[in-house]
Image (cartoon, rainbow, N blue to C red; front, side):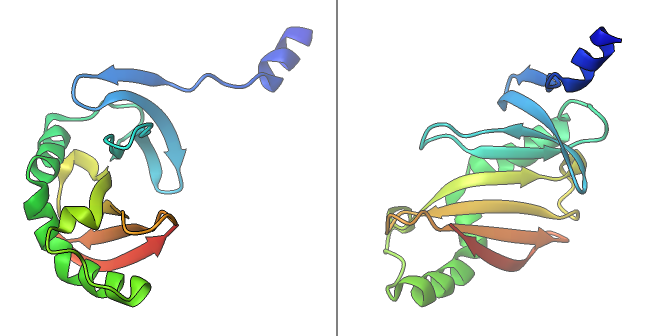
Length: 152
């Protein structure tokens, strides 16, 4: 009885894996289902969340999706640049720098099941022009940008 009570009250160990591409991943349970999470602890690291089924490890198609997005950050930024420029102008009353990397840096990515771009996915850019830490999250559906949300 005492052993059962201790097991019930003790914090549960979360499942983690070491992935060759994504690093240390922690399995989380979200409203929409489970996902793997890589937390960013340094400025040059990306926060990564990867949808999964059960505790299945990330697929090769998810790795490809990730590489397609992060290996050409300029192309990734270009997909959302008009929206980010407008929102940045509204929020900060100044334009994005000619070199967009002086204004934003890629901060995170949410990878859909099987790397399927038709499913919802996200990329997040961190604003570098102030100390408030604004995050511009670009939400995609059917591989098209549907809106940008701004958080701190």
